Structures are given as structure tokens and as C-alpha cells.
Image 1 (cartoon, rainbow, N blue to C red):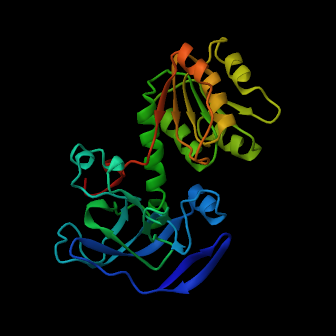
Image 2 (image 1 turned 45 degrees about the horizontal axis):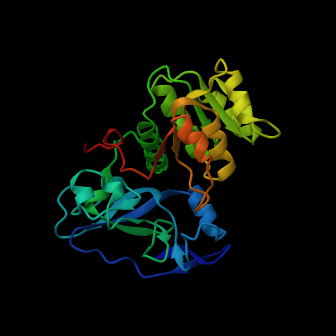
Image 3 (image 1 turned 135 degrees about the vertical axis):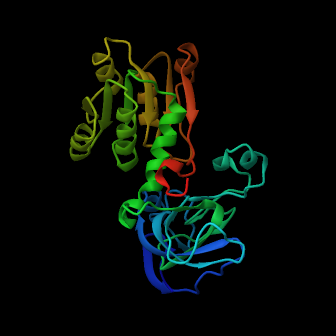
Length: 301
């Protein structure tokens, strides 16, 4: 089969590789569409350390079932499907409690980080266990279905933030995940919604998709600008969707006493945070790792 193979930092090649072997509990999917995650871009340039070549990247995908293992019962050849990016074991304590994103044996499709290598969906075919596969509704195109994994990240991030209707919320970063987070927050009834970014076209999209206010962070004191929109006290909830020290610190300082900050972005492996400000103002910090695709997106749930 043809694959898009990362052979070195900033080097991709069309390569022929063997079609994946289908074990008893596996589903072989002929890939129809695959998104390019920001983590793939940082894997491409070598900055993340989680895309060690050689590797077939890609984890936001949809396609058609081409082959099934002998134990597979929920799918048949020809079914239109998508799948989780996280391959979980289904047996550990976390999986037993439903927290499959925290699985002790978790692997992510299209990732190689030293601990494991799991080829992904920048390929004609990808093999995944039946337990992470979802049948698609007839009316959902395969191209749109490839975005379901990214939407699930945003849904889980907002759930982790514990944002409530009428809470004031700041979203730092208006890339794809940030824009999806804004839409989920708008659906949840949060208001006012404030989007911050350094890119004017992204901010225009943020406003179009539900932000009440947008802030260009270039040459701006973001916490001060946020307080100006919140009667001087800061937002109830902030979500940081970048993953670097400066934006995390701004999100924390823009949050009111007793508020919460959810860290969604993971651009940097390590960051510095204002510990005294967090402790003395009782800011709650939440981390977010990708969740399974919500059943509301699937035809078989």
C-alpha cells in the first residue's frame, strides 16, 4: 500500500509498505480522508519528540471497512466508519472505570515517542481494534467525519473545565481546536466568550463562530484586556489551547479568584507557571488528554 512516510525531520516521502495484518479483533479501514493535526505539524519539524522517524503519521481519519478479524461482530465490509485516535487496552483499571484515555497501555495512532511506535492513517489502509471503531450516520460525509476526533477533544476539554451556562470564558488560541472549543462553549451557553490570538484571520473566524469579544495579543497585556471586559475581576474559566509558558501564564492571570484554567494545548513538553498566583488566588488547574469519540457522533451508539 502507499503511505506518506516521515523519514526524517521535515522530510516526507510517498513510500510502499506492506498492508497491515488483521488480527482476530481488528478492523482494516480503507482511509478516505485524514486531517492534519497541529501535533503532526510539530512532529514533522521534529519539535515535539513524539513523531520519531520512520513513521506514518495521522490520527484524524474516516473510511470504509475493507476487512474484519474473525472475532469482529459489530462491523461488516463496506461500513463507513471513524475511530478513536487512542488505542486503549480495555482491561486495565482505568479502562474498567471508563477512563480509557488514561489507559496504562495507551498508544496514539501516528505516534512514535520512544515507548512505542504506532503507524497512523496517512496511508491507504490502517488497522485498528474493533473496540475503538464507530459506524457513521448515512448523512455524514467521510471528509466531515475525519474531524470528529478533533471535535471530541474540544467536547472533552470543555467538560473538564466544568464551565457552566452564563460563565465568562477566555479561550487562548484560535487554531482549529480553539475554534472548536469556542463552538462547544457557545452551545453550552457560556457568556461572554473571549477569544485571544495573534492572528487576525483566526480572530475573525473566532468571532464568526461565537466569540463575543476577540483580543489581538500582539503588543497587548492580555490579562488587563480581559479584566476590561469582565468588570475588572477576570473570567470564571479559561482554556489555554496553545501549550507554552507565556500563554498559560496569561490565561492564569486573566482568571478571577477561585476560577479555573484548563490546559488543552501541548506545544511545549515543559512550561513555567506562576505558582504563587495560582495558590493565593485558589485557581484550579485541569489537564486534558484526548477522550474517546462521544457516542452522539456515532450511528451505533
